[in-house]
Image 1 (cartoon, one colour):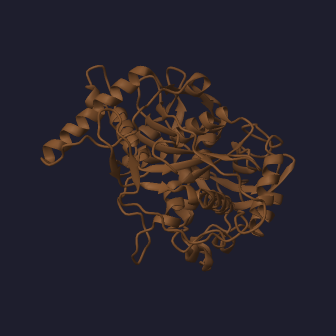
Image 2 (image 1 turned 90 degrees about the vertical axis):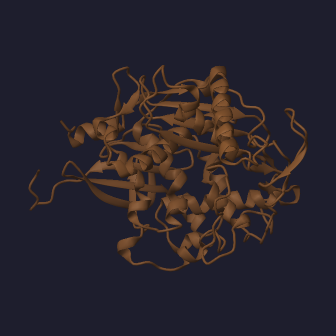
Length: 467
C-alpha cells in the first residue's frame, strides 16, 4: 500500500543513517576488479600491453570521514540538486530537468535494519529508468559523503560542488556545432573548499550507483561496486592540477540494494590540490570576465616511473601552473552561475559563462512553459529567500517545491559581485538554520552557502475535490 502524502513528507525530513564502507579490504577488492577489467580489455584488443592508467595509490577514508552518514532523504536530494542545477539547465533549461530530484521523493525509506533503503516504489522503477535512478541517486549519496569528508578536513572553509563537464568546457571543449568534451574520461564533479583571502583546495570526485544484489557467492571481479571504483580511479587519473598526482580524489560507488541498506563504498587518493590566493579586485578577480584559455589535452600529462612502469606521457585534463589562477576564477564564476541556476535565474547567469559553457543558452529569453523563473519569494525562518517553485502531486495531493538563495546573496550575484558575495556568504555560513523542517513547510534542506530546498502541501482550492 502506498504511503500517504503526509507520510512521504515526514519520511523525507526524518534523519536516517546511511551505511558507509571504506576499508583496506575494499581497496584489495577494487584492485582485483581492476585487474579483471584489464584482462578483459587485453582479450578484446591484442595490442593492449600496458594496464590502464589509474590513481597509483588508493586508501580508505579515515576517522569521521568513513563513519556512517546520518542525514535526511530530502537533504540528499538537495545535495544532488545543488550540484546539478547548472549542468542540466545549461542543456535544456526545462522544469523537468531543474527539478529532477523530485521523482525520488517516494523512493527512500527506513529499511528493516534501521538504515536508509529503497522503498517499495524505489525498488520497482520502470525498467528504462533503472540506469537513471542508479546514476542520479548514486550521485546524491556519493556527493553527500564526499562533501562531508571535505568539510571535515577544512571545517573553517565553504564547500562548493560543481559539475566537472560544466567547468572543463571553458578550456577543453572540442570544436563543433555543439561544444562538448567528447568521450574523454574525466571526473564527475569538483569540490572546492574555499575561504576568502586563502588558497582554495580542489578535490576531483567520481560517483556511481548500481542495483546489483550482491551475495557471498558474487565474485569480486563481478561486483558492480568494485568495478565502478576501479573505473572511477581511471577517470580521476585524467585530471591534474599543475603536476601529475597532486590533486586529491574521492571515489564513490553506491549500492542501492545492499542487504544491510543503501551503502556508499568510498576510497580516496591524497594530494594538496592547491590554488593560489585570488585578488579581490582587478582582472584576476572573480568579478572580471574570464579570459580565453586552451590548455593541451593530448600528451599533456608527464608521468614519472612508478609502480614498476616506465616514465610515460599520457592524455589528460592538466591545468598548468600558469593557469592555476585562471582555474580559480573559473571555479568561482561557474559556482556563481550554479547558485543562480538553483534560484531559477535566467539571463543573469549568462554573464558568468563562456560560449562553450552555455552563455548563449542563458542569454536568450525562453518561453515561460519551458524554463524555471526566479519569481518566488518566501521568508523561511528569519531569512528571506528568492528563487523558483514548482507544483507537483504526491498521491493526488498538490505539493509545492521551492529552491532559492538568501536575498542579499542573490542580489550580489545578479550584479556580478562574486568576491563580495563570497565574503558575505562566508560571514553568514553559521547563521543559517540547520533544522530539517520549519513551520508552514515540510522537509527543508538548508545549505551553509545560503541556499534552501523546501517542500510543503498546498491548501486545496475551493472547487477542488480530494482524491
